[in-house]
Length: 471
Image (cartoon, rainbow, N blue to C red; front, side, top):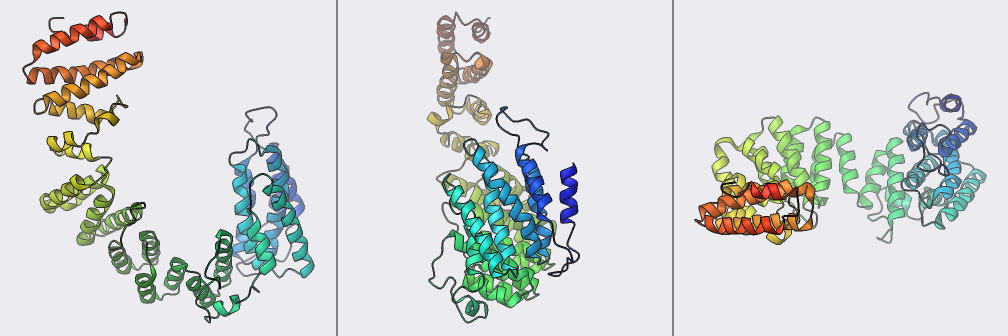
């Protein structure tokens, strides 16, 4: 508690929202002491899994790091560094001691690297201060490299080394360059550094430079979102239609437009986004956009876009939830829409909810054909298949007998006593099918064999005997 109080007093809060507004510097010493206490487990209420492993208070570490964010938002990089540096200095040796069993503590390093980069880019550090911090970061990163955390702090090192003086950057921010980086290719560290630069330009109110850099770097979503914030809505929509290639980008900008009160533009852009081609390995981009448009338009009583989106959501997800959502919205138009959606479901190569949808819709033939029997046998608790077996016992008795007996046999032969009642339930469905097929004598013969085979299983035998007529 004392260390937290010292840290709180040291940090205080920015005295405004302009860079340099704070009149006193943050004292890094209490921050360092608090970080060490949190990383040693001294302030944690939790107990470690071993007496040799300290119960690091990761929530506390995250809260301490977050104390730098208000300073960053105020453009006060120097005071943000006074928090981020001592936390990093304490974290590196603490993590090295726990590297062999750490699961999540290492995730703080890329966060710290990103925030330090932002702080450096908005600070007027003297050359000596810059060199000193770069040297320390190099040492820390070198220690992390030995344990596989390559480049986690490299963004901060690059921000110190390159700053705003990288060749060609000034021309790009002035609108005289079309591509960034100049080579046209960049790695993930370059992308993170560009993100940090954009954040600093945004915080500093340098909107045109932000727009130029975002456009040149191919960060089209950031560019369009800034246009919305500048009330250049028509320009943002036109830019999106020209540059966006993914539904994810469209969704994010549509949400920004909606939050800005531009409802019509948000819905129109989202509808356009549904026309983008979904990538086969990433169909859920379209699904997310369609669900957002469906729910948003429905809430605003915009029936036409809501129905369009509802159909698109199901056609790309083929999920039961999206099918039901479409039914709820369609009303009198459901008959025609239902036929179209079911045809799409039948033609799909893969659909997790296919059997359940067909079953719910009374399409028993299609439901039976949709079952991959060899695969479903692995799951004796498959309630959808059990419902289908009951519904199909009269129309597809042989199929039901085969599936139910195989499901029950798998359970009984494996000796899983906890599932014996489930095995009996499968056999109950088989009885219905035997009866519907006029093969009741075959069932008596079959159950007698099962009773004899499992006579030594005291929990199973009475369940089987109860299934024999006349028992």
